[in-house]
Image (tube, rainbow, N blue to C red; front, side, top):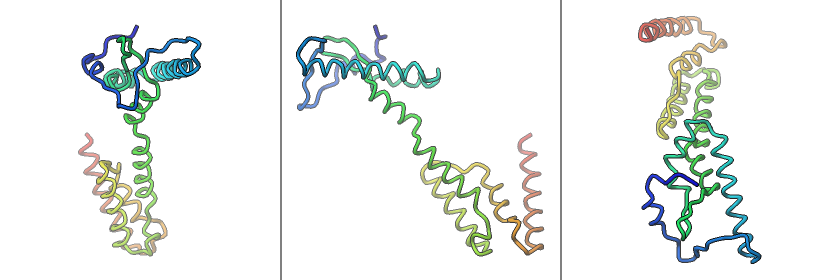
Length: 182
């Protein structure tokens, strides 16, 4: 038996769209009902498989959101809906956001002044636009300043005076950063 939901009234209050019909399912010989019965069994098996393979922290998060994937039959029996549980899990981990964050990180990390025709203004504009795009979707670029210095200190830059200037600024930044870290 499943533990009671955090808000049983919320589950009891769920209403079906007018195009759906609530039916108690058994494994009788009616072909249509047998198909629905096994769909329900598979759905429960998917839910059990997910819940038995996630770590404790994720299981706790899913438990806190079980009102989204546990359904009650007309007799009050409760069922876990596997596909809905999977959707709750995917919404929690949001893989597209992680991939997008990695894409922003990659653009910043690989930026080099030579890719912008040696034009510092173009490089800085590019890096700032990527950083602002990330911020716009609620993400931050880790080690942005470090990647900025690396982009400016590209080994192919021939201007030694410029490289020395940027290197001094980087050294100063690293000193301040190490003092803040302590």
